[in-house]
Length: 126
Image (cartoon, rainbow, N blue to C red; front, side):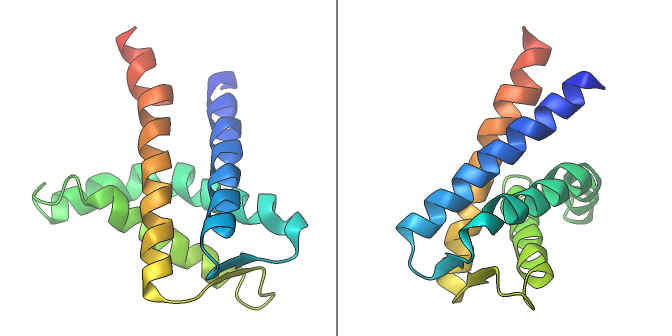
């Protein structure tokens, strides 16, 4: 249980850094007010940690494992859209355009992959 909480905390910090990086590098991604950055990242982290284990195998099975390497991008794109919808009324997270959405989903997927290798794959092999 303690290791699970540590992994969730690490993911929260990592996704906060990714959202901060995205707002700095892409002018079409805005998180206002600045104090809401951890809340936005936390919501995405909850989706990523809580639902990824459920949706990943289901979507891989639905596509007969053909899209195995594209599934993390698709799932993170769905989580990003859900996160934007959660904060849509307060306008805390605004992602303008399809390109910005796909770019942010790709960066989040890259971070997700690094976190998977560092927190899930390597500890099982060592």
